Amino acid sequence: MHPDDATVVGIDPDTVRLSLVITRKRGQKVPEVMQIPLAGESNHIKSCGIAFRKIGEVLHDLTSDNGAPYVFLEMPVMGAANGRALPGPTISQAQIGGAVTAAAEEFECPISWVHNMSWKKIVCGKGTIAKTDIPGVMTDVWPELVKAANGDQNIIDAGAINLFGRDRAALVYRLKSRRKKNA
Image (cartoon, rainbow, N blue to C red; front, side, top):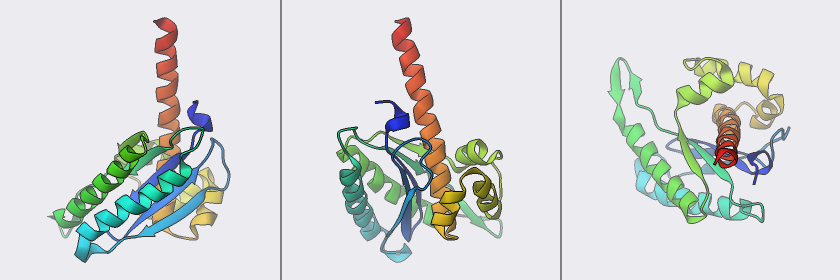
């Protein structure tokens, strides 16, 4: 199936919730947005179980005759404060990301982990854009998303990840099609 007609799920994970933006075709103006609450920073193992079950439910509902949805998940990056690395949240996010990946595998969904600088560069034009500047750019790029996000930065980020993912899926499809023609 051509990725323009596929369902794409962009996911921005953190230690307290998963933020999802779902589109069922390229150019969909108003996306589906949802957040899945997790158990919180104090119980990341329980959060992994919740993430696995809830993402599995979402992917089950999205899997159709058109196939499994493409899933794009922001990868964890090392946080810092006062010049010190903060590995704790990064480890929790990586474990939660593993649970999301396992759920995607259960439904045979293509899944890609996306570095935040990659989606920021492609969607916002600058890989090092400040988090506070992203809503302004996204208002120009996808105003319906920003309205649906109702000010939630994580939903806006998940929408940008969705756009990045849809673009990447289409590129991979074109490259595979070109290889088949040339074979």
